[in-house]
Length: 420
Image 1 (cartoon, one colour):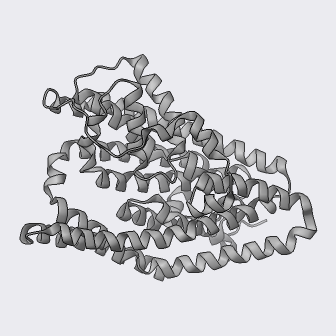
Image 2 (cartoon, helix red, strand yellow; image 1 turned 30 degrees about the horizontal axis):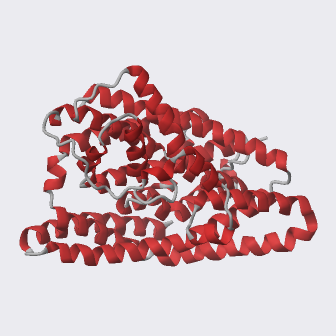
Image 3 (cartoon, helix red, strand yellow; image 1 turned 180 degrees about the vertical axis):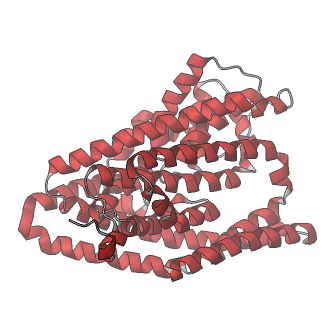
């Protein structure tokens, strides 16, 4: 526990130091871009180290979790409960973004100042059609899916593989035990990689500040403040929903996932926090077979922070161009985003891709995305941290529903157990 807290402290120190060093270099260096490029290399190396863990870790933990559940009916029951929570959280996140952007109307400040000419955004919006998403869901080759870290494809294959292992029974037990060993090895590798997290955080933050300067925070300060306020409200709603089912233990859960949340915030990557989030949930008392099943699915279907951002940003761009969207149109937009956002996992600059696809469907100039590019890194920090919180709460609640949530503190201290 002390070692974990020490790593969290170093990450926070690196975050603060990165801001200071980045600002100094931005104001003193003649060409800070060269420094930014060098730091981006360090960040890329760290994220690639994390990504090399994701595929084997998701596969091994998910297969073991499903195989040890016993039968397909139990897997189906847990899956339905998980998707029910994900759907409710998705609707809440998307609706909150719509409500807040209509209250704050941040785009009005830019009305009449924008050029409607197309700008190159390098976002492949055509890749998010419903047909392509469904085709993409099922892997043509699991080797290709793992090579590309396609979480959805890995989840689908692992689901079938785990069900097959459960159906075979005793003959598959040695293989399941071996795969369980792979999971433990990958968690140990995660511990080694995480030692580099403070360096990566410093590189990411100092690089972006050195290149853009603090002016990037000032220029869109109001928009960012309103969005972060929305994130805070969303956290409050998610925590309240968790409190209804978990009671005061929700605060214990937040303590356990504090480290992964800070890591996701600092690196602007939910994937970077996946291994540590899984460990935190198991320490909290979520049995491995539930955590290993629900959490990977949540990374594809329960990106709460990203979904709130999609509605908030899309309507913001419409406001900036003076395009008034009726309530019916906004509700339709929310329904579209409910579908397209499920393809976010594994897509570079995923939220921007989803927004670009949505803008084109509602005749809103895609050029408006340029407004967000310079600050997207800072917005992504909040989105990524929220995704970790949302998925952690979802996994714990599903475990509670299934009677698979224990209390390690009471189990370790018999004095805390109720008298019989």
